[in-house]
Length: 195
Image (cartoon, rainbow, N blue to C red; front, side, top):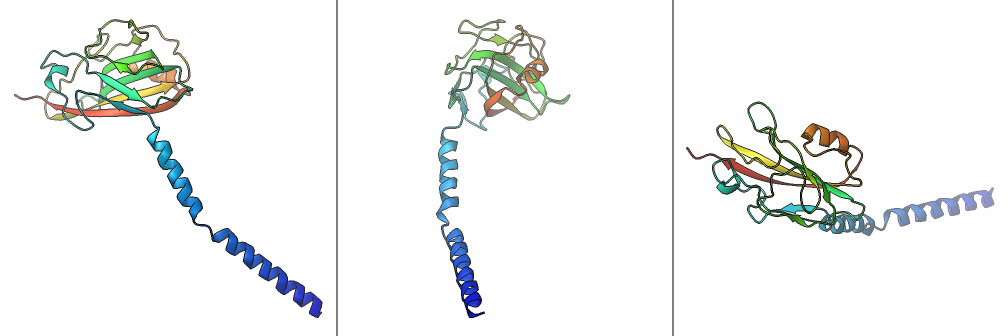
């Protein structure tokens, strides 16, 4: 009986010791937080030299100015990406989200788009442009009827080329992208017309 009790005490002590060891190292969550932090540094980013996140879009890129597309630059595209797609829209439009720009099948190894990207179905460096809600190919700038609107430039890295002809709509591009997005980023600018 004594042997049995002694063995039970030893087992209990060993179990306590093990549970203390399991609970003891709090560095593990910190390490994973640090890892997450370092992963965030390598995440995709979409920027423009024309305006920063949340800032006003300059008049030249709107219907009140030259109405040309802003320059865009991106970093952190995953190595698994084959193509890039960009959709720019205004969720504050009175009739619902208004699409200003649709691009797809841009080469994944590209670094950005120049200001005043030509309003052509295909681009010289590769890629195609779709139809915006103005009924035109390429970029159509902010032109809010009233108030301040937000304009989101949504950037997608895809693991394949989309089997779409030039001139596709946002809905067609979004449907074709399903299951192929390996990374995404966005840039938001605002615009209000001065009357």
